[in-house]
Amino acid sequence: MAKHDPRKALAIAKDVLEHLDNLKAIETGTYGAVAKNAKLPVHSKSDAQKHIDRIERNCTVCALGACLISYVRLYDQVKLNELLKPYSRVDDWFDDKKRYFDLQTMYDTLASAFSDTQLGLIEAAFEGAAILGELPKAPTVVQAYTAHCFGVKYKDPRDRLIAIMNNIVENKGWFRPPVKSLPKWVARNFCVHCFTANELRAGRTIIPSHWRKPRQKKLTRSA
Image (tube, rainbow, N blue to C red; front, side):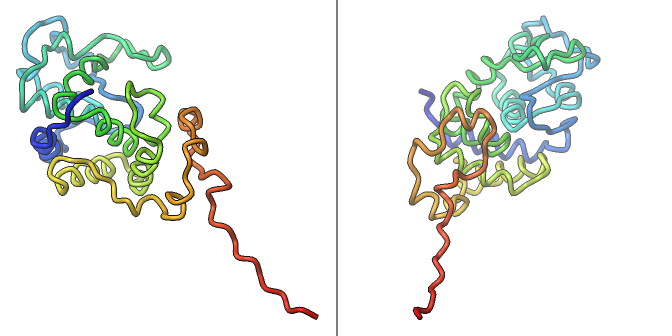
């Protein structure tokens, strides 16, 4: 299990915010995709940091993808041929005009800054709780739902990313969605069987009926 390093996480969050405008696009559903016409030497074993400006200008990222770019800029421990691959992890997403971030490289690299739980919370906040089915090690369902509630308040992915990074900065290197994001009556009545990982994978974000606040019965006057 990866050990969280709040010092590194804080530096990465600040760097993401500082260089946000350099990115080509911020979207859900794509960890990182660089346009092939960026003409990067993807088979080169040179440090990816040397090409960071060109990567940024031509890159579409999600929250973790943005963190990876900042990690490369700050710590220079990733080779270009390990970072970018000419394929996607999902066949339906394949586009031969793009080079994709290698998932294993991304998780292995970010593991030196973020714990598995922190990565999962950031993903749940940015992509929605349904993303849990794709994570190697996910946070608990309650944690993920809390993060999901934090993220859905921001409809624009860019605003959502800014909110997540600001939260990490405010909490000195930890992503801590406020507990009030999860209604108290939901937390009080929660049981692990109510909201399973399969339901999350299917994209279910509606609170199960028996979580809902019970209506008060109207008092009727006796005859």
